[in-house]
Length: 98
Image 1 (cartoon, rainbow, N blue to C red):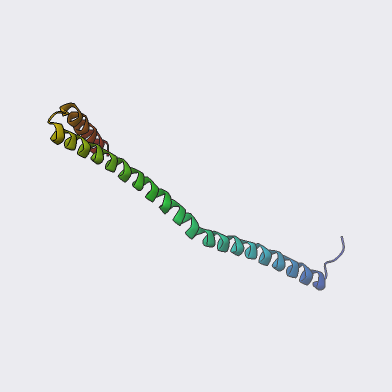
Image 2: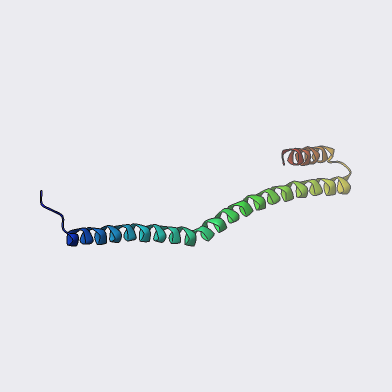
């Protein structure tokens, strides 16, 4: 085995430092990309949450409208007690399940 010279050690140290610097650089690039995409992911989750809430509100509005229609029908013709009972049951079920 030949003797290692000071020049060879210096070259090896330079290459090792360059490789380590490259690894650190790649790590920083990945970190920056993750930070850039983070707000987009957060907005996407918020939009999904809002869509779920809107769907829930729409369902509640449908139940309320059905109940109002049953009340108006009862007031107009004096009957429709079965519609009132159905609307009451639907609203009760909606409020309990909510």
